[in-house]
Image 1: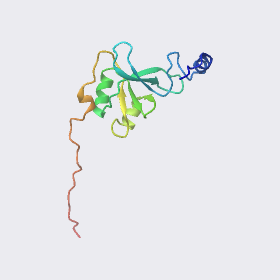
Image 2: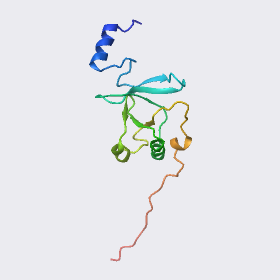
Image 3: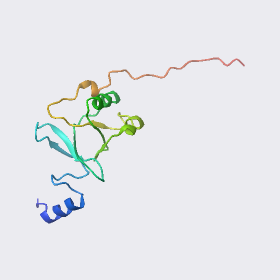
Image 4: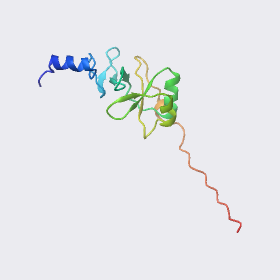
Amino acid sequence: MTEFPSWLRDALITKGVLTPSGLSRKWKIRTCRDCQAWILAGLDSHVAALEVQADPVQLTVEGEAQALLDNRATYDDDGTSLSRRLHWHVTGRPAGQEHRVLPQHRCGSTIPAAWTSSTQQPTTPVTTVQEVPF
């Protein structure tokens, strides 16, 4: 495998496509340099992006609420990139099967099981039968 040319790397960093640590919009699986836990790392936006790190654990709606109360950012994972969730994402696109939501990585802190598995039974709609009076 050939090495990435330094002139191309410098040009991509100057244009904002890559960061000095080699991250781009597409997340990469890495180990945290401090705690050695497996994380997803990437840029959180196309414009004015920040390098973010997320634990590869899918949250439930309740789990996302707990993560936010714990002062952890949450991110939408579309399979290739991480996007920071803001208050309108939380209510408009709740965490679950359709929207994979991951918590911000925090060294030395594990994600409680209650954040990842729903403890409530799925609710079934209540149907009532009423006779039509005519």
